[in-house]
Amino acid sequence: MTGGLLIAGTTSDAGKSVLTAGVCRWLHRQGVRVAPYKAQNMSNNSVVVVTADGRGGEIGRAQAMQAAACGTAPDLRFNPVLLKPGSDRSSQVVLLGEAVDTVTAGNYRTLRPRLAETAHAALADLRNDFDVVICEGAGSPTEINLRDGDFVNMGLARRFGLPTVVVGDIDRGGVFAAFFGTLALLSPEDQALVSAFVINKFRGDLGILRPGLDMITKVTGRPVHGVLPFHLDVWLDAEDSLAYGRLLGRPGPPRGTEWLRVAVIRVPRISNATDAEALAAEPGVRVRLTVEPAEIADADLVVIPGSKATVSDLAWLRETGLADAIRTHARAGKPLLGICGGFQMLAERIHDEVESAQGTVPGLGLLPVEITFAARKTLARSAGAGMGEPVQGYEIHHGYVSTGAPEPLLRYDDGRSEGAAAGNVYGTHWHGAFESDGFRRRFLTEAARQAGRHGFTVAPDTRYAAVRERALDVLGDLVEEHLDTDALWRLIEKGPAPGMPFLPPGAP
Image (cartoon, rainbow, N blue to C red; front, side, top):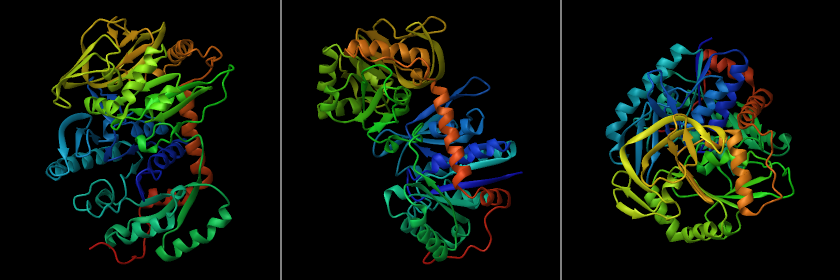
């Protein structure tokens, strides 16, 4: 078979990424060679893909998760355009894995034709290499202020004749109004491609919902192809930090007599917040994202995650009182971990003429290093060891240790040192390091000792890769059990459902 599908959403975080992953896993189980695709992603959660020629490049982490659902390796074509916000007004542009420019809302229009051309070529290439490509939209297809020149939502669907399924999050309320409004503000040509709806995160009696399903079909002429229930195990590899609740994951009960309480600081430009997910997968480890100094005081382990704006987010820590709370925590002998940008914030000084152009600024002074920002970004898959255990990870950073030779937290396979460990304060540039099971267990055991949680016992059998595979299987199960998969097959094989009625007023 050959075909494709666009999964659009009424809003950001409506469920596009997880539905795309679920449909990909369902098709993969059927023996279909399937690939995910998102023309343009705006997210600071990314992973490194190493190409055949050894070059490292970035794609959105959600597309890497969807690739795993397809049983295939991540590919730069799966997310040809990645926008990484560094402020409210500017984003770094990553094109086929490589940072090529920084844009604002004003000059984005100038660059957009080049981005669209690259995105279209990537999808055409994927359609030649795979039986099916499941495309994910961005935001809402009814961004009427952005429709001119759109190559991500209905512009993409029009270009490739893709049938479009719109997913809405009923947990937020107003899902039927969102469906109706999304469709009614599209042009007749765009509406003709919208073939069905899917409801996400439903809780309760489906019989009570049934009259609404019947009515939205009657007034729009589009069927609802299923209602996905809310599921507690769907939380890994979020598209961005907005998808996270305050409590990360669903921790199992402790193996010992005490919990280990972890506070992850939600800095404004948080990057690769998914690093904390490996900690949250451990029984007895309670991981909370926070912006409150009081919750730092109550934590056993504090984590400063990555940041796309290290100097700016460091200033925010000081403005909010979090910097003082972090220092108090560390000086009490409790464990403190900085990852990538968070590691850089722990330094004595930061020299940055690249990302913020602010020159030399004082860090938190908790690790005996200085950080300098290089113009060229480091992009690499890395392997080595830490605490006597093998470790794998990936690197995405401009900053590097320019002064200081502390005890390293990790070492590369070739013996080079990485990161720092000074008593109870730790830092590393490696993302994904805590997905290495042995290293994570050693680190958490030491963190519990330093925090005085002597009743905490790390689980000996948690395998993070297996946790992720189970989550993908859950998504595949939800699609098989709760969606009209026969109808999805027809859309993928035959294209948009014919004769879809027009819903006024429509866009001009």
